Image (cartoon, rainbow, N blue to C red):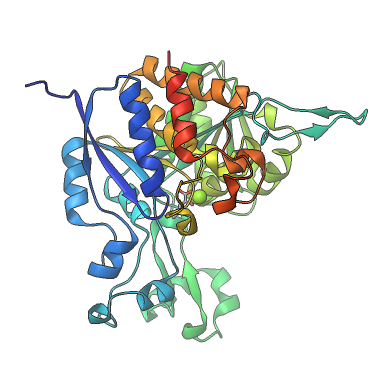
Length: 397
Ligand code: IPM
Ligand code: MG
């Protein structure tokens, strides 16, 4: 029997996750990646039916096979999610947590890599006015390293904190300002950074910068205000930098970074941020290179790695026939999986094929045409999801 080299756990999830993931598999097959694919459930349907959007069977499969492709999930705030549980499960104490955040934490996928590179010829690329009134398109090549498991996403939060928590907080002089507020009227989300996790994300960023020849690593935090958490990230970065003399260490504040990235985005290369700021700055950079249809990511731990587009599940587009959504972010994420396992040649072939299709411009999804999404997109000249994939496959060398 001819055994496949790799087994990949596929988690399409919700909405358009089910549309784009099979497209990525088509490209992986066309590029000659030898793998078997096993399906695993995740997301909204499992929440509604079982009160758990991240089934144990999915965790078991990932543990066993260590490589995952993830599509997208629908996430809703706590109360809205609780209302949609099937009637038998209502009021039984089930609490919705985002399963992708859960997955990152369960397997300690603490290094999240989000490359934001402009493809030449993409009509969605950021442009700016020159002083002379012309238009120029800076080349954007930024790679965001997001700490993926802690910070504000650690999940340690309360509305109406227990008395012990209040008592502990009262030991901090700054809590005086809140002493007279009733507990029911206080909500607290904690931001926990650990030195070990800071070190892992910073080291991963420097290693990547060195390997790929990037000139700088920028720590994007807010140490002037968040002195302890952002301060720790900066301190660790200075230590790690000692081993990378040829790479510059820069530091920006998240707010200023958001402004500068539409001013001089070409100046940034590798960027490191904690979980929440990494979430924000990666969407912002993605917006400069085509938006969510192009935004890919890797969630990497010591054993398991999961690759996903950073877009949401866009449920309203799930059932369009033909489907219209842009599969490129998912396909780029699959290419990151190939990078991860050292199959670089195939990863490069996929990215080159995407670059060729984007540059040629004959086949474009609705987002690239800047027309509204919806059933009429196709009659207005948009390519369908499968047509884009076909065009990419046709360009594979
Ligand atoms: C992302 C997303 C997720 C996050 C959501 C879906 C929980 O925005 O991957 O960037 O906040 O991490
Ligand atoms: Mg996000």
